[in-house]
Length: 162
Length: 162
Image 1 (cartoon, rainbow over the protein chains, first blue to last red):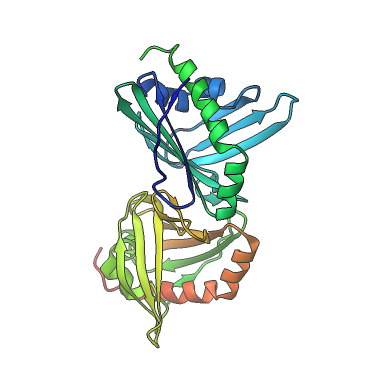
Image 2: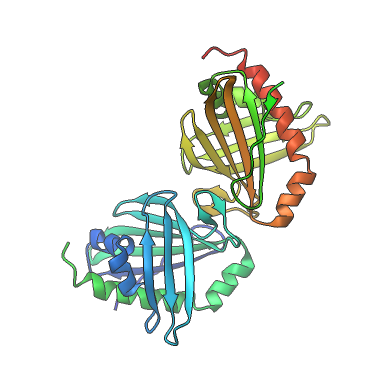
């Protein structure tokens, strides 16, 4: 299990989750940016991610399908805002492509990867455009869901060489 | 007067304004990205722009004050999404800094500058997150206001060497 660590939000309307992952940050970054790896951990099981297409550069598309245990399928699409290899990835669903507004700007997700004595300090921040969306995201189970995925991410990362 | 030219929107919820500006596109681009120049044309007179601060790079801040003839002052702030020198500038008010959601994502403004036999084809596209915002922007006088500013931009650009 990835070790929880307490990190405070650094902006309003932000949910934050932080874990120490027992793997180098180059590997954690690969798990976030290689579609074949992402599909193995990015949905809380028994949900699955399929059809991931990751054009990992500012303005590039980030798209995938979330598939439930009963076959429910939900397409997700967003755009990368910032990419610093092995350090940071920022994605938002506010654009359906660069730079066309989506139907519903829900959140910006900023993931950072830092060296840590235990491996990698992995911090995921979800920032929202409204208090209502923040609350809805929390009630949808942000902390449980992202936490379970972080455990899955660590289990995968530990099988991969640096 | 900058010559109007008919250009169609290329995405939903978009207002577009296009003009031929009698000046090289390097100069038109400078008028958009040098704060001392921008302040001379960016508000429809008798309105004025003051305190322009332009950090012209993806993620950089774009901020200025709009000051009315009776001293009304409205701060504006946004973030650059994309910058291609002498070709394109994309700005949005959806972020108050990189990458923190603003209180109200209203629009993305994409300006392009292309060589044209008459000087520069200057196209400004304002894209919105909702039909209501598109309509409000049109009713606020997008076409008249941006058109008047394009005339002011051309008048300034013609005084500047390439």
